[in-house]
Image 1 (spheres, rainbow, N blue to C red):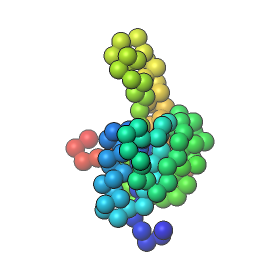
Image 2 (cartoon, rainbow, N blue to C red):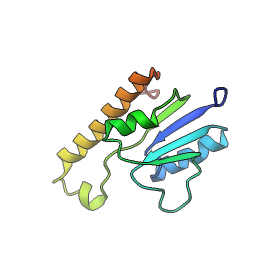
Image 3 (cartoon, rainbow, N blue to C red):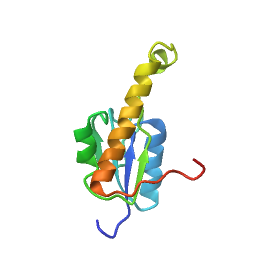
Length: 121
């Protein structure tokens, strides 16, 4: 896999993540996807799909076990419309999403993975 392009899609079981996995596969990437759940409406095209909670720093270290050509961090606490839009869970949603980002960043830094932001951010 050394010469092959590799991608990690965190949140790869969701709508956008699932479509991103498909596109990366069409572009010739070996793809690992990670999510709390398997894709609901279609079989994943990821070469490796890991089901797990990215709030767990050990899981982040396990899935970022190599340097990837590209990493896409789409994972977030979504909880469904009834959970998100009431306003009662805003602090939990922000905490969980920030924790995911911190764990992913820490695992990338430990692995020596180059971290950059998307253009325009």
